[in-house]
Length: 191
Image (cartoon, one colour):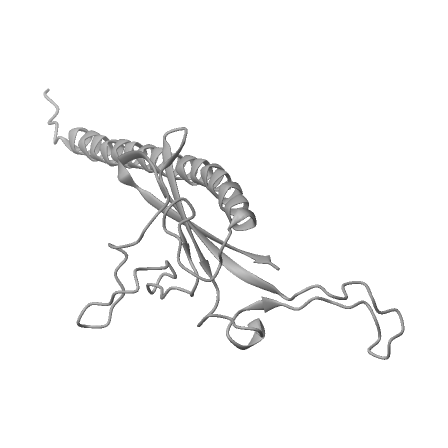
């Protein structure tokens, strides 16, 4: 007597193989995504380290700037009036297109500083809406100097004679592998 085979085992095996195929494909995709995320985190870390180098150089430039009342785009990459920014907060050229949008194509960046695989550029702008004049608190973002007293002369004298410190914005552009760009901004007061 012959028994009839109806092929249900074959159908079950095919379904299991298709499920295993989809599982393998999703495993490859998740492994690939993990590699991408790890690469992005490595770029972020290296760009932060590279930005530190540019920040140190810009701070040095701010401290040695001979004239803060005019733009100095050679050697200092400095603008004496706060620059307009893109919607992302990146300073751009003072030029606007017909629609009034900001374009950073004409920005003057520092000479590139090589840090590992990254090229780092910076520019400095003083956070003043106009030339400060004798009272910088009218047109500039300032840090008021604390006198250390109670306002009645008691305990005063800690910072007597010191000027209020005007803030400077340092914008750093990091260009990494495959021309990826990252930006860092810091503000620093200088009296």
